[in-house]
Image (spheres, rainbow, N blue to C red):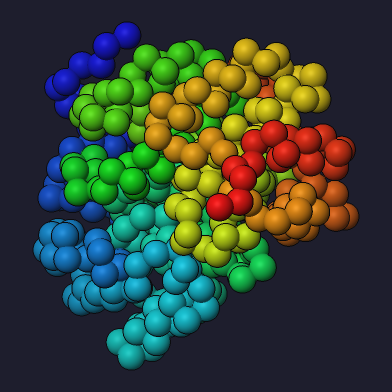
Length: 372
């Protein structure tokens, strides 16, 4: 199924949790369109939270776009990278808000990737017990996943995203043109979060990803637009049914239990989040096969697709299997110390369940790269 090359018109996906409703706007050039910023919560002050990599590219354009709506539009540039998704960076935002004399009549704008979105959203949830914020994701990973759904957090040295809050954005503005400046490694990492939606929720989308992966890697505008829109549609549907991850929403963490262990075990920022998730999906598919939920052909299909996306399919050596198990027990899906995995029991359908430690050890033994 070849992808078209023309950019489609802008699209809107609605997230409705029952008590909160907001738009995800997807299209080219949305940063400069006045309609992108109309209808947001009224406030005297806005603060753009970005980082040292993204702010020089897009902060001036966003400040100009917001200038007519707010009396003051500030900017703070955080250090770049997952290693800085921590208390010191969070406090930099609070320090700036205090220095500006910001009160509850303030809106925050998260301009950047998943780290910026998560930390800005958490700051918005905490500042004076909650102020509005808007997600302006500039990476593929953030556009298809982390900017949608209201999960905000910072990392702890012992576990990823362990300190946070559910705080829904007032809007998500996905300007696809910002993906043009995304490094190739970051683009591939974002594809991991696109790929996950097929196995867990939409077998036809999995077929589409396989057919259009080369176009996505080549940044074909129509292919990227469809991938972002369909990913957001799936996530919006899941979040609308289970905002606080009481059940169904956990399926969005396919590959993440293994992936978060990789990130924490190696040190945050050594592998990109999407790289760890890509490898984690290979391990989770292999575990699904070992438990008799899917056949070997399906597990091989997932591994082949992740490899085609130029993402790791061999897990790093984190030490003995018990070290992996220790890391995976520091996971929000764990219950009473028991690790629960998102597993696939049919193409397009996932479930959350525990797995015997011996099965996990066997998967790790078969898929871990030998120590250098």
